[in-house]
Each structure stands twice: as C-alpha cells, then as structure tokens.
Image (cartoon, rainbow, N blue to C red; front, side):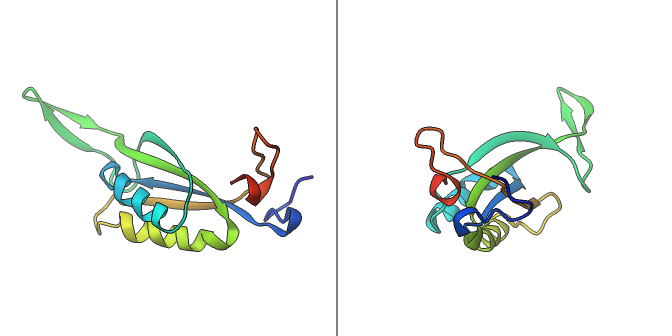
Length: 125
C-alpha cells in the first residue's frame, strides 16, 4: 500500500531529509544530530555549485578553475514529528554566514521497510 503524500500507514508520518553542507561542518552536525536522538544517516561526498559558481586555484604555479565545489550530502530518515527539529539543528550547526553554507530538502516518504525484520515505516527507522 502506498501513500499519495505523507505516509500515514499505521498513523505514522516519515520524512526524508537531504542536507548539502560544507565538508568541515560534518562532524559538528553529526554530533548535534546524535545529541537529539537521530540514530542513523548516510553521508556521501559530492561536488556541486550554486550561487558561488566555483572558484580559481593555483597549483604548481598554474591557475585553473574549480567549477564544482566539494560538499557532503547527508541523508536522514526520521519520524515526521522530529523533522522540524532535525532541520533546525542542521541549519544552526552548519551555518557559517558565508556563501555556500548549503541547502536542506525535506521530502515525504511513501514507505520504509527494514530488510532483515520486515518492520515498516517508523518502526524501521
């Protein structure tokens, strides 16, 4: 059974949070999220650009353009009632007040299944 918008199977709402951050903020953000009860996350090293559009660097005397800036992508699945707190913690912890601090996306999850046990949705997080 699938949900059209918020997953409400068994009365549970589940959210998928994607955060793109500066790499040196990762440990601080992870510690803050663990402190509020987030039990797991996936981290991927990514490259991208937004308003900052890359920069130039000098390597062995030669200047070259770096069009994609290194970032980390956090992927977190949480109970719906915890999503706002997770977003607030990420935003306050990752913020440097400089361009390129990142973005946070919150999506609805249709279904979560734990492979080992068959548990679903909030029980599977």
